[in-house]
Amino acid sequence: MYLQKVKEVLPLKLPPAWVELLLKKHVKVSERAYSATFIDLAFNECIIVKEENRNYKIIMIDKEIDDNLSEEQKILLFLLRRIGNEFNLSDISKLNLKNFKKAFNRAIGENLYKKLRWINVKPKKYFLLNIYLWVLVLFISLLIFDLGLIIISAHNLIFGSIFISKCSTYTYEGKLMAFRWRAYKRYIKDNLDDLIKNSDGINKIKDLIIYSILFGFHKKILKNLGEDNLLKDIFSKWFITPQEKVNKLFKSLNIFIGELNKVFRI
Image (cartoon, rainbow, N blue to C red; front, side):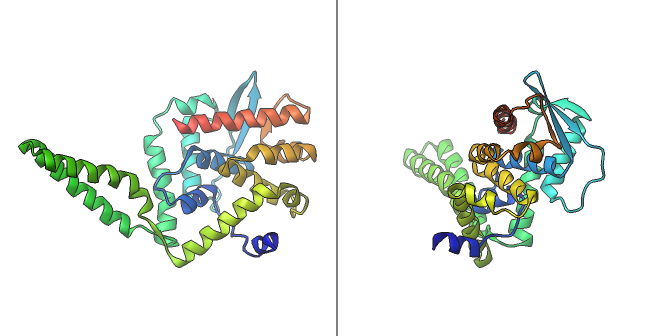
């Protein structure tokens, strides 16, 4: 019964970073959203990864930018192209990614907050205003050294900082879409065999891999694909490795995705 209900509410395909922002309602996405976006670009034949002596070389493919890419995908692609045509994965971590992440998150927010209107951020704006006012009160209380006022303002600032991420609310459409994606997340996690065996082609499996990276259980997906000998077919176009045995390819991919998460965690 549960599986049937989930199949009836499978969500529309969305860029991975959109999914994370939708489910968490955070202003900033995690490193897994950046990594899933990177892999999505690789599947779209924008990037080649070459493993050399336990290092990963990124090779940018010289092609026109696909109009179907979302804005944050283009922002990541521009960042990578700016580094060079060929570079090591570790070179990304040497950059100051602050402005990139700010633009990346703003692009997602433009879609979910303004265009699709799945998340209402007005309550958050009022909450921010309240925090700014308490910062002003704290500053004044420090000047006049009013201990009672200092304690009250500090208390409100601490709790305001804790609960500010929970101020955003779903619209009706956003709540429905978030429900569908939570159900899909659980479905992927609980039914890997069923999903892979019944997927309509390689593209559906690629989507499963991208979303499993986002949700943090890609190891299960890759191991399952390895047992079905599908790993080489799916990754051979963009992941070049000297590893020929499927179990070693599985291990190499896991290491690469882990290193990718580390690069964007900084």
